[in-house]
Length: 210
Image (tube, rainbow, N blue to C red):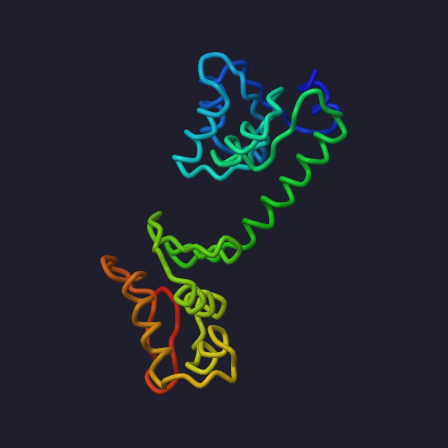
C-alpha cells in the first residue's frame, strides 16, 4: 500500500522486504530519501540505520514504526534518523515529511564547499579532507570558511579578522596569522597537494595550485 501510494504521488520507489536486502539497496545509492521500518526481519531498521551512518551515508532517513515511546524516538534519532513517524499515520503527512527531508537534503548539498578533496560544511560547521574529520575549533572553522567562500581569490587579514571576530575587537596583531597557521597544519600537513597559500603583503588564498 505504501509503495502504491508513493508511486501514485509521482515518486520512483524501490522496495526491500527485509533489513539485509534494504541495506544492500540503500548502499547502491542514488536515493533521495529512505523510509525504514524499525521491525524488519533479518536486520532491524535501527541496525540498518547504524550501518549506513558508520559508512558515512548521509541519505535522509525517515523511521516508520509502531514504537511510540520517547526512548524509542531518542534511540532512532541518536542512531542517525532524520525524522520519525509513528503508525498509524496519515499518508498526506508522510508525503509532507518526505518533501521536507528532500528540501533539507538539497539545502545541505548546497551548503558544502569543495576544494579538491577538502569539504567544508557551512551548515554542519565541520570540515573533512580525504574523508577525514579535521577537528577544527570554532574560530579555526571560521577562518577556513572565509577562505573557502573566497576560494581562488586573496582574502586579506582584515577580512579574516572581521569574519572571525567583532570588527571592533582589539586583538594582538598576529592573532589572525596564528589561526591561519593552525588551520594550515590541519588542512595541509600530510597531504602532497597544499591548499592554503600565503600572498605576502596581501593575505591568504585557498586554491588548488596549477
